[in-house]
Amino acid sequence: SVLTFLIDVISSDSFNDVCVPIIERYPWTFGFFLIHWLSALSVMNLILSVSVDAACEARKMSDFDTAALKKAAFRSTAEDILVMCKQMDEDSSGTISLKELFDGFHKNHDFYTSMCAMDISELELDSVFHILDVERHGEVDYTEFVQQLYKMKSTDTHTNMMFIKYDVESVSE
Image (cartoon, rainbow, N blue to C red; front, side, top):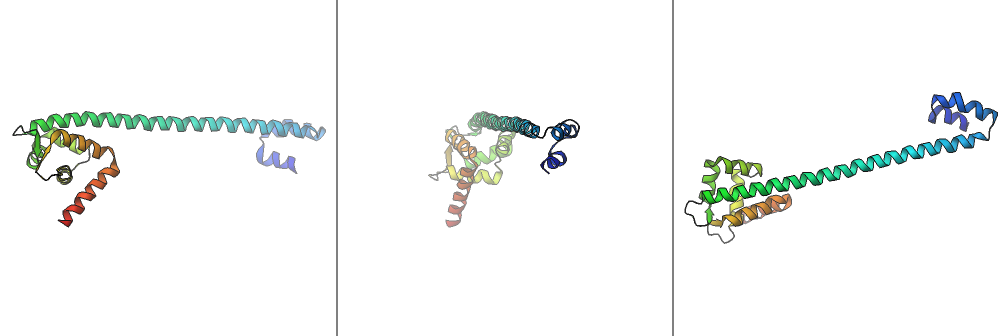
């Protein structure tokens, strides 16, 4: 019955042609063919596991490379935003007001594009400004603005928590 099981379920057609006549004539060879079959199965399993492991490792490296490229692109964008903030600083005070920020959002296409690239809408821009204007002077140092914007957008959870904090403070006032 074990031989029938091997023939019908596990083995290939060549097993019927080659091995069955030998096993029928010399029953002790069944153990030899079973060990051979198990060894082949083990080697195939090892090859499969190595292939899957290599694919997983390649995926990890791909994710790491993607994160590194995204971080480099964001740093480049942050540097560009700093230059734009200097240009939008109408009174050359080294700070940017909410009005200057909104004027830049509406009039400076590059600034608008940069904000959109960071998923910051016009509504969120107001929240971001007020989050960073801790002392409520109505102005934010634009170097600090860019640095904090980078920190806020580099961690999604942190960004969301900052927006929630601002919204809760707004409601409570």
